[in-house]
Length: 71
Image 1 (cartoon, rainbow, N blue to C red):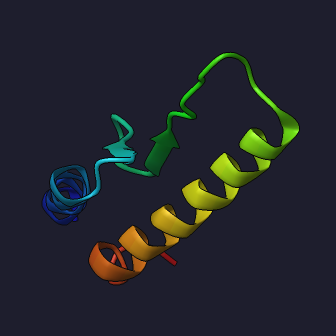
Image 2: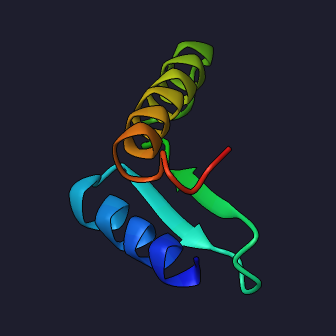
């Protein structure tokens, strides 16, 4: 199962520039993070749109590469 998780993480990291994936040391969690780009400060709108984009991209990556290893 660890091998499948690592393959999943590598595929997500290779194919999705915006989201970064990782597995915890005990392989119990698949983690994703996302950087919100700042240009001259942070507006409420930028935070909301960045969060929505993170959710969209992470969900797409999970459906594409991790459907068989996440519940």
